[in-house]
Image (cartoon, rainbow, N blue to C red; front, side, top):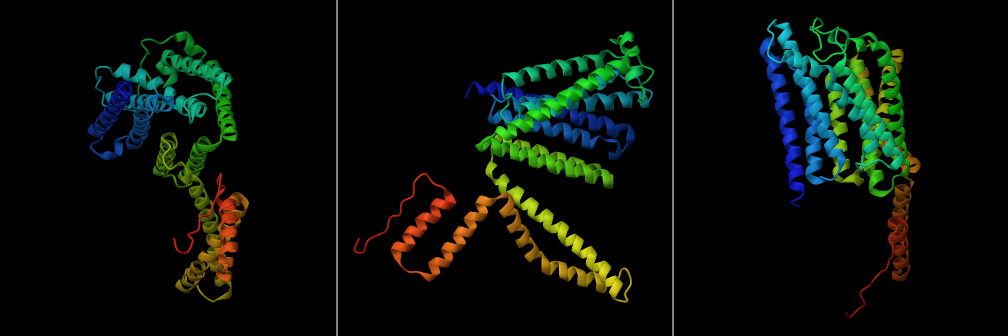
Length: 391
């Protein structure tokens, strides 16, 4: 246990540095604006979630690479948030603060390792913290070279080319190479193709690992896939409603699911969660369509207005009365199609309960009970002990 103490201290030290940088970014954003509107709350929250998750994972399993990956992602994200706010404030106010050029330089490339670590490296390492084989280790090494080259390129490109949309377009990168700026489009195309190929490889590794996973690892993958689906739904909802907080909620769900899966806490509840999500999503969709159909039907049949409270009340009562039967039918359909073992077990128990109420023969019921336990729970061995009279 003593060998893990330095790793845990380093992990929480990185968490402390990331958190302080986030707090500093919020303070710097509040000062010139005089209110909370200018503070990068969402960026800082996002950047804080990753190191928090990473520190928790390292505290429990210091030998796993997933925790350190989350720490690095969060650290670079906080560096980007702080440096961007610092540089924007300096040049917006016309006050050239000390280190402002260095902040611009950090803002130019610090976002890249955070984003690349999340979308490229994490699918290769999740959930065990190791690639699946030596071949995939070479793929990860190639992606590491690609990420390093991209970060180096962003750090050496002139500011006037890479950040012309920002307030500090007139600055010059102190370590920039002018020749790279002349070929920025070509270099961007090459690295874009490489990033696309790396993303395809990472997603393929994730799918292949899910197909090969068994037991606990498969449950971990289910947590990840389930949370990714919810995250995709929140992105769609945020796009339609123009509410950024919905995306943050989806990302919070995703990171929470990753924390659960990596720490292996209540893993096997994911099957029940997925089942309930599918059932209530389908039932809600059906009932919403029924409600809209009833409203339109009543408006055509009855001489009432389009917003009549009678139409709304009647439609609501019908939908409320139909919720229970619809949910049970959808639950039965989902169990039959996607959870056949659970469905068969429930049917077996139901049949045994009926037989139990109709028969009193102890020997027959004993053999039936053993058969039910064997078919529903699949134990390695089943035995039934009965207490004899007089003992």
